[in-house]
Image (cartoon, rainbow, N blue to C red; front, side, top):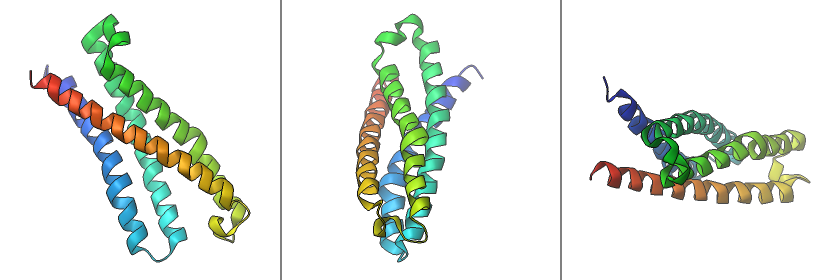
Length: 154
């Protein structure tokens, strides 16, 4: 029972980082490849990213708290803690600003697909920004997993 916080941290790390990689680089591309209705594929992808964002916030907050409990006051100098903080900030910006902005553009474009509307240029720009942030978050997550493995194997 005393290892429960560590086990929960391992599961949270797996769920969040694994989710980033599976959703972003496997499920969504497969969805767009196999779904002929791009508007529907975009809606489903958006829902997956939104859900994953909430998962990321919960897991990230737990992992940051766990890290703080592990290293105490040294948390401000802990690389893993800073990786978590940056990842959480990216998730917050995406969840609270970029995704709602893009959803609003899609709504305002109706009945047209957003890419066939006056919002196409703005949507492409925000989609690109979101994609870059997602890539950064995914790479930071991979670094966190590698660090976690190296620390636990010593």
